[in-house]
Image (cartoon, rainbow, N blue to C red; front, side):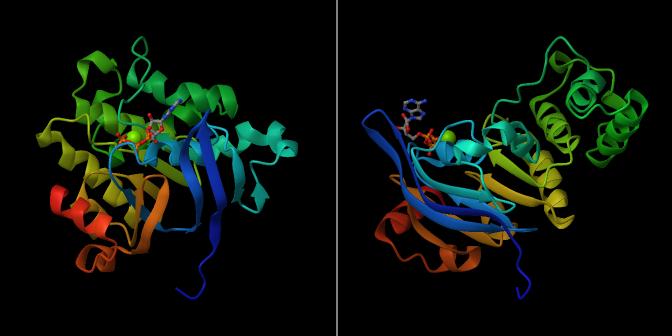
Length: 248
Ligand SMILES: Nc1ncnc2c1ncn2[C@@H]1O[C@H](COP(=O)(O)OP(=O)(O)OP(=O)(O)O)[C@@H](O)[C@H]1O
Ligand SMILES: [Mg+2]
């Protein structure tokens, strides 16, 4: 823990939608190679927080310092696309292009945005597909894939851009139970490879076993932010205690 390198520093982040305050003075740091889970009740602001991190939502106030740059600073606006490229995002709904086969889904962004040559993009796609056990589905269309396969492809699509950090928003909650394991296994392998990951999840076992740290976000505030085993074994705030009673 000595040489922790800060990747994202969140300072006093607030987000309102008109009069509704959704995020209330959030401050925390994310470190390189760290896996952090975010848990909490529905409507507490978890998705909004992730969406602020990659500027899909514009924070109302506060700072998000990513690789040393405050990405909320208006003078950085021209770099927003560059910051986003460094952050992979995986949603509950896979958002694959239904009119494109797997290979095209994977290669279109690196070729267009990063100007990666086609052969390089395709060999990278094959290499990553092998890692998630889907090299044989390279010509399939999304409609021919199961939910678990689609989500693994969506993860590969993010990895194609070589992100510095991956943000996951309930990546398994749209899946049939028997497919959750295959997606969590891919995420575990990514974590073991040293990927920096911020994971909003309902999978308490994943949070406890894979994420070194867990943040409990409720009513727009960080109620607890500590090593996962401590948070789960020794919850302090009454809200966390009652939340865990409901979900465990
Ligand atoms: N674009 C928006 N406009 C207005 N209100 C919004 C918008 N997005 C989110 N909200 C509100 O912000 C609050 C937090 O929503 P958010 O989706 O961040 O919660 P969550 O913790 O991800 O919940 P869940 O576990 O159900 O996914 C909710 O009250 C929601 O209705
Ligand atoms: Mg959400």
